[in-house]
Image 1: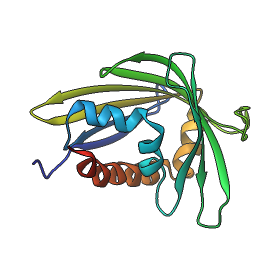
Image 2: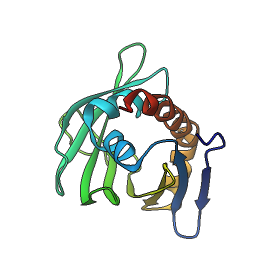
Image 3: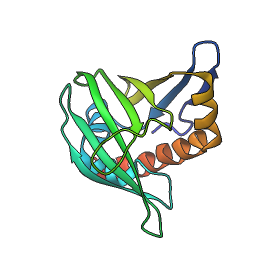
Image 4: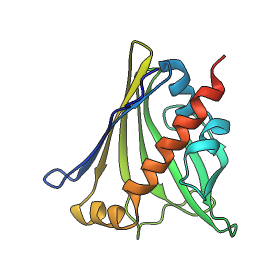
Length: 167
């Protein structure tokens, strides 16, 4: 088992992107399942002490994952992922946006187009993530909202979850 898992996080202001490279101590199928199954996403996607509650997940191209990040006080921040392209066990793209409980996008808040590329070598799965934003201001807003810290916590949640899923 590898102990020093890769986690690179960078911001490219010239092309309005956040680029993340992250390794996981698990096979590709397990990591893919964790990124694409509501019951598993609910266990790791939100930074603690928040948790995620999926309202619906239709995992097909053109489908949507509608979920709430729920605070300890039971306040819900609604988000959605509109799935664009799915290449099973290889890549997954979606448009991520804040929304209401019915999936109507909040156009006042930033949105991100996520491209996630999955690969495995020697039992270690790497996910290369690129978040394309509409503007530099959107990236700055995401950073100010604590995206890096929150996503880092989510990755740690997934690290803790994956060994419990292995058969």
